[in-house]
Length: 249
Image (cartoon, rainbow, N blue to C red; front, side, top):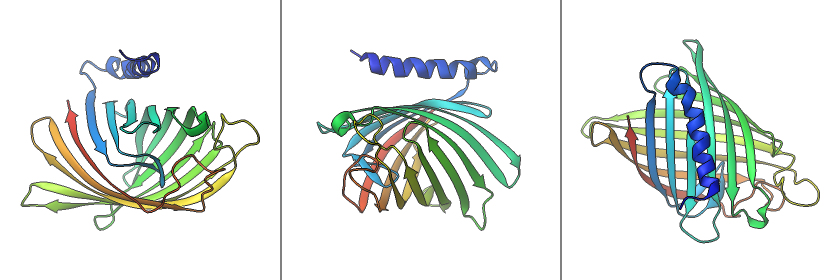
């Protein structure tokens, strides 16, 4: 039986999707992702070991929203669910902007030091330069009182014989937070750190509405305090794989 927490998340997702359905006669585009990740890493910091991850996403014109979850296979790992929404627009042919909000619920964080977060964001994706697409994003979390800036570059390499594209991504960012453990007792936990990484993904279409995706990922961080910084494992040089299926409607 689904827990009250899970039911609440799916109810919120349905409420979020309702305006998208009502905005036009045609139903919104829908996407479902089901993935296995040998490690769950967020902005350079490992949050859980091998995990099952799922996404349900709806989009209509410039609006999108959905729910994402990560459930570790090992006992004692952190479980996570987030509800997110974004509005995307193009002020010019050279840039696409996306304003976003994300509500996150966490369960199993050591000491219950973080139970939920709420983050706003603004991301800019620029026109490709010689096949490379640069991006710049800023995020502010109201509960963690944190500010994160991230730059990235992506490139798609055609694999003609396979009839597919190899997607390559590199990124780097810095995060400063005044209260990384908002539900912990005592003084605020203030810290800042840098992170970077990259990924190589190979999506391969296997049907009219289905795609299998394999990925190899790497991420690292430096300067983070394991006591005052964002929660997560103390290990570095995170390398992991993802395998999943994408269903679009």
